Structure formats: C-alpha cells, structure tokens
Amino acid sequence: MKKVIIAGCGSAGKLVLAEIKKAGAQDYSVLCFLDDDPSKLGSEYLGIAVRGNISDAARLAKGLGADEIIIAIPSAKGRDIRRIIGECTVEKVGLKILPSLFEIIRGNVQFGQIRPVKAQDLLGRKIASFDPAEVGEIFRGKRVVVTGGAGSIGTELARTISKARPAELYLLDIDENGLYFNLVDLRRESPNAKVEAVVANIRERGRIFRIFKSIKPDIIFHAAASKQVPIVEQNVAEGVKNNIFGTKNVLDAAIANNAERFVFISTDKAVSPSSIMGSTKRVAEWICQDTLSGKPSTKIFIARFGNVFGSKGSVIPLFIKQIEEKREITVTDRKMTRYFMSIEEAVALLLRVCSFDKSGTYFFDMGEQISIYDLGVELIKLYGLIPGIDVQIVETGLRPGEKISEALITKNERQTPTSVGNIMEIISGKGCKDEAICECNKIGQRLREQGELEIAAKLEEITGRLLREGITSIHT
Image 1 (cartoon, rainbow, N blue to C red):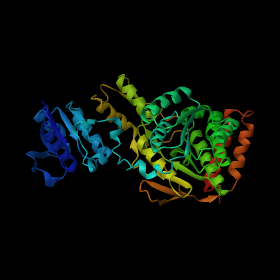
Image 2 (cartoon, rainbow, N blue to C red):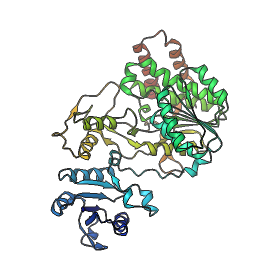
Image 3 (cartoon, helix red, strand yellow):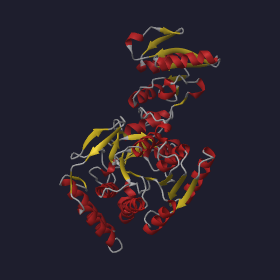
Image 4 (cartoon, rainbow, N blue to C red):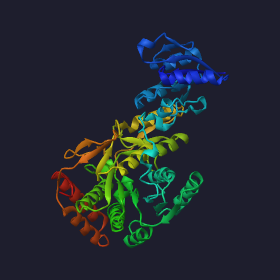
C-alpha cells in the first residue's frame, strides 16, 4: 500500500481525500495533510489530521514513511512548488499534482487524473481561463492561415482552431516534415476539419501573394520567424529577410486580399532590443503599426510576450535532455531571468487578442521573471537528482545579443487594461511616420550587396536611434 501525504487542506485537498475514499483506493493510505494556514494545524477532515506546514514535508515524509506527496494547492506559485520539490528531493519522495484549477472548480477531480509533477508546474502560473466557445464564433466558417504552422505556437494554434469549425485551415511553413506530422495528428483529433498544408517560404513575396489570392484567407496568424538569438546574430541577412520582409510580405498579402484579421506574434526581445533578432522583430512591429496608419479594413493585432515554456529551441527541452543524459547543464549567466508561459496559455491569449474589436499592440501578463539558474536546479531535483553532485551546472557566459533580463514595454510606452485581465494594451509614444520603414527598405535593396556586419550595423543604428528619441511607433 502506497502511503501519501496531501499538501494543502483547502477545498482541493479535501476533494482529493474524498475522491480517494469514494473510489475505495485500496492501494493508497493517506497519512496526513500539510497546510501553511496556522489555524488549520491539528484540525481533521474525514479523520485525517493537518500535521504541519509545507516546510515540514521532508521531516514528516521521513518520519511517517511516506512514499508520495500530492500537491493540492491550485493557487500555489512557482516558488511554492519549487520549495516542495526541494523539500522532497532529499528524502526521494514521489510527487504528484492536481490536473488543473478549472477541473477543481467544476468538482471534476478524479484520483486517476492526479499526475506526476511536470517541468511546466515549476512555473506555478495561474493558467488563463479559456473556453474555446467564447471566441470560436470568429473562426466558424472562416478560412484561417497559420504561418509557422510546423512550429510550437503554430501547432497549438492549429490544434485549437481546428476544433472551432473553420471552413478551411491552412498551415503554411517551409518545414514539410513538420507539416506532415501535424496534418496526421490534426486529422486524427479533428476528423471533420478541413486542414491543408502549404509548403512556402514567407520571404518569397510573389509566392505568398499567389497563395493568398487563391485561398482568400479571412484570418491570419503570423507565427513564422527566425527566433534563435545566437543563430540570427551570425546570420543577420537571413533574420532580416524572415522577420522583417517576410512579415511585410504576409501582411501586405493579407491586406491586398481583404483579410478580416491579422495577428503578428512578437516577442519581449523587441523591447529596447540588444540583439539582431530583437531588432528585426521591433521593426516588424513598426511595419504593422505603419500599415495601421493607412486605416486598412483588415484589423491588425500585435501580440508581444516572453518565452514559451517547452517550445522548440527553448532552454527547457535542452535542460531536460542534459539531465536525462546525466550531463552538466549549461546556463549563460547565474543572474539571468526570463518571463515564461505555457504554449497552451500563449495560444489561449492569442485567440483572445484575435477576437478584439480594436486593432493595436498588446502584451500578456507574464507574472514574475524566473531565474534560469534556479529553474535548472529545480529541474534536476524534479528528476530525483542532486544539483552539483549528480548533475553539475556550468556558467558559460552571455552570448552576443543576450540580456540578463527582459521587459515587456519600454519606458516610453504605457499600458492600459483590456476586458481580459491577462492582456494589456500598449499605448505608444511619439511616432516618426515613414522614416524607419524607408531606412529598412534601403536595407532590403542592399541585402545582396552588403555583408552581415554592414546590415547589422544599419539595423542597430535604425532601432537604437529611434528608440533613443522616444519613438515607439511609426504612425502618428
């Protein structure tokens, strides 16, 4: 029989205990509750006492011979979950966690749904509440294009939108293998949805225009981009072609074909950019804002957010691979912090933005920045290993273009709330009309003639000068 301790004696913890007793789970014996509320200490529920607070987890687990701790604290922050993991690692106690806050609210918790703690749980974020039916109407009967359809965000967008009964859903990407596997999954999950793959390079303006003329899309999510900071630093021209001119191609094609909505997926690295990648995304934001000044019939939304936890090419899959192979994990700087959100939450908020009536620039509430070093430490513990003994952590130094921390708005921007609590609208400072666009067009004309260093210098000169002058948008 497995002996368990329930961390949390609130409504969620009580539901877990009741479910265990109701299900007659003969393989489990609940030893006690843990709770940080001092008024609950010594109290009982269904014959099970609150024996201590969360910091007593390791001591009680050892003293009572617990095999497992179930975390039943839906309001727990990431640092609380990381603390529990830290307490339990020493005693090699197993950890489980409730599926989600919304399952608890609906009274839907079943013992079989309680699962092992995952890397994503280290965030401890309150995932944005999202009912697809709330925004599903804007996709029903519409032709939707997702660029970057083989990437992490594009894949999750497609999975969610396919369930909203669009007339047609097109995944556009240069990665044919990624598109193929996504199609297989989507056709299995949503057999009635009409989903097609389009192999295309967003840099090829003529091809994009021909595709959009044929498809006549109503809604476009532009997720395709060059995202890896160190790679773009070494391949400046490619980053410029993809992130600046690729974005312009897709946006212009959308407007030329009278699309209803266009969502550009930006990044916190576009805020006071220190990297080529961030600079290209900043200029792409400006292109979208400049297009808005022409008052097109197409609604244009710019969505700015931080790192997506577990997405392709992010630090988390790298850490996990290094830990599973018992290799040292590498961090560039011990002080580095980043904003994180889950793929599911990012997509839920993108769909919300797409449903807004007002064009504009929006950013997502990312909560607190998380230490990359601490995240590595807690991931090692999550695997039942000891940092510094089983797995070493090595600092490698900041790479070109990297920042110690990120921001979501500049000092010359201000935020205003929207009807959705997790989403804020960005109100920009003064504009400069077409100056930056004109400068970038000059870069485009010289891409074949200029070397990487010349292009990088020009791009940094444009974004740096305009931001120093307090210019945060192109349109006035």
